[in-house]
Length: 246
Image (tube, rainbow, N blue to C red; front, side, top):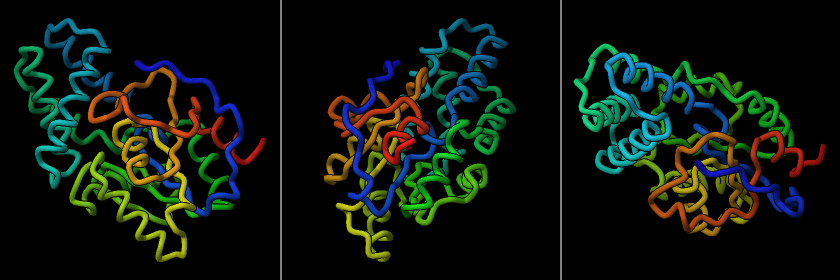
């Protein structure tokens, strides 16, 4: 997993922005432990020995593959297919009951402890947007955990695509333009180098990388190595403290 990078050398200037858009899963919702626990418990129970880091890599490759292969499929279907992919890699039979529980797990994924407070503080000053690779129904449960803070929501279901496609960004920027907010007044924040920071770079957006300690989904593949955030923080709390002041 990528080690947390040092904080930005100088504070960002909040006066440059009117909106802040976010990746949700990995940045605000802490999905990785639940995914890993579910896969590790199932694999161990089936008699397979596999390091957690290897399971994470298998899952990450699988979800990226199916997202690009079938951009219209809902996220629970991506989880079903990814589960089968991991089972095949491990030489295990697919347990249908475990697979269905895995596919239905999104509403159980918790928010990070700093997410709600950070978003509430940002929402006092900025329009907030969510650009997520989730389907509408699954995202609704997570949005409730985040206290319904977003003015603009672009899901994979709405976009008909999965990031790193630029479709989410184009739709989100179009929504913000209707609020008289141009792209150069938008800051994008995400934990995924490949799905958020790099696409933001390609569109000329200022992007911030939230490099949560011990988390690694979205740090490899599809141009992740070319991602260039303007600042990196280990948590949302650190980002907001630097951005808006303590």
